[in-house]
Amino acid sequence: MANIIRYDPFEDVFGDLLKGFFVRPLSFEGPSQFPVKVDVTEDDKTYKVQAEIPGVKKEDITVSIDGSHIAISAEVKKEHEEKNGERVLRSERYYGKFSRSFQLAQDVDESEALAKYSDGVLQLVLPKKAAVSAKKLYIQ
Image 1: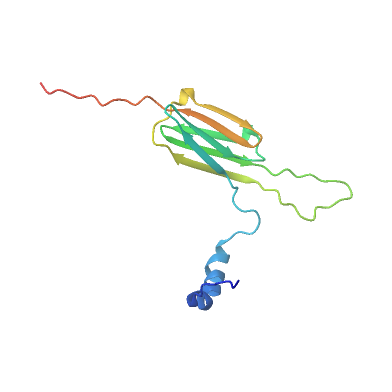
Image 2: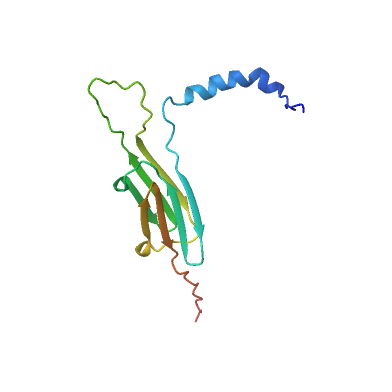
């Protein structure tokens, strides 16, 4: 069976020029940004968040709640280890800070929120605040 390939004349003429001129100077060598995958689910009373943060100690993770705004941040530290008679030829460990924030549809009750970190997964249980019903003001 023949493969069909879409031809883009703009890509042939300008593709390599644009990739080399705009993309490469802005990219960084070495490890890329720390990848954090987040799943958010909800039921009638709570939001549940699962964030994959492998290789981080729970002491280095910070979760802040401000109404319906949730922010997760962490700091990863590279540990240096020397061995007698050996030299490191390549190290692909990473270090630095990262943060991830998002807005939920409803405010969260901070006093009832729970956080658990196990096997590289941060689990948050964020209870929703009771919806305040609008008060109708009668004019006298």
